[in-house]
Image (cartoon, rainbow, N blue to C red; front, side, top):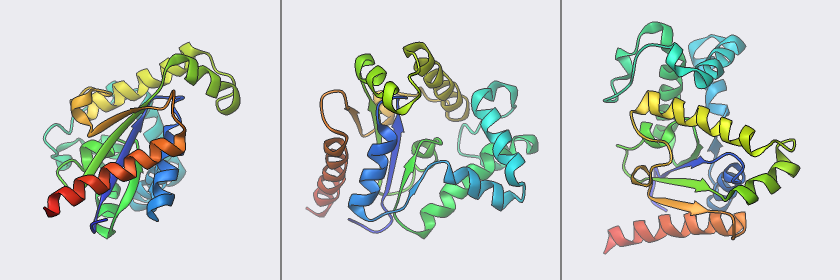
Amino acid sequence: MEGNTYITITRQYGSGGKEVSSLVADKLGLRRYDRKVVSLAAAEAGLGGNFEDALERSYNSPENCLGNLGDYAYERVPEHNRMYIEQAKVILAIAKKGSAVFLGRCADYILKEQPNTYSFFIYADDEFRLARSKDHYGNRTLKELDNEDKNRKRYYSYYTGQLWGSPKNYDLMINTSHISLETAADIIVKYVALRQDAKKI
């Protein structure tokens, strides 16, 4: 694997994408960042736990915050919307330190201009998501699972101007309904290796 390789994983709620990201990180010997990014952002901003709460509120209702990153001009986002700014800064700072796996947090958009960035979208059929909900998500209904995805879609669209889940935003989309999560992780690892080998030819 080439130096400073970034793998971003966006996932449909209930698809097993979180576990897939952990498996990918383990297979490649990399650190994985998800909610850790929020904690790091809070520390960097010196805002502590209240900052994390504020960021989560902006995640659920981004339309209540002004500003849009649009053309990557993070510095132009109003001061009151520091939650996203600091998170983006943390992701970029982590990327400078070396290869990593990022789960959610618009990392695919934030890192899209960085060389060796590979983005994946994990999704699954409703039956699979409901089955996983019984064991992993407190037996939530399909409507509850879909509502979480609506929040993710709104947050992603607000800050990136792109459509969450659109194939054109990702290198590969993987349906985990009929393959193991381990296999899904292997597909991602293999895809990255093939892409990087092709560059050497």
